[in-house]
Image (cartoon, rainbow, N blue to C red; front, top):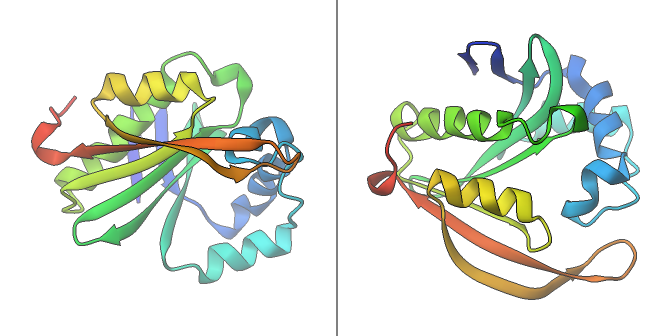
Length: 172
């Protein structure tokens, strides 16, 4: 997949992206909201294997002006239902509206090209910025799952479930 909106690009991750993904996934600041404040502690080899053999998920690199700034993925989790995730990993590119644009690009692809009717996601209850973005796009909060898991420090974390139905989404 290769989606373009002006200077923003969503492209399929390749083996050549394993180094940058490894850097991001091992960065505790990037991975804290996913429950890994110390990072994943993974290797380039592990990521190359994941990129080569994981057929359950589609992983993408987000670029601004041809520079990788983050990642995004989606998985098919039910009939015409996709689950998505996004991380803007370059902190200098956060709070600029890029995440919203990238998410809308993916939503438009999933609804209008890939044939999905519903998109779901979850986010850490502490990630107020992400909640604001999702709700502004039109995602509906379904539930707050309190104390769902412990992060690497043993702190209980809560997740918020969201969904967006194609019939409720206005192509933006």
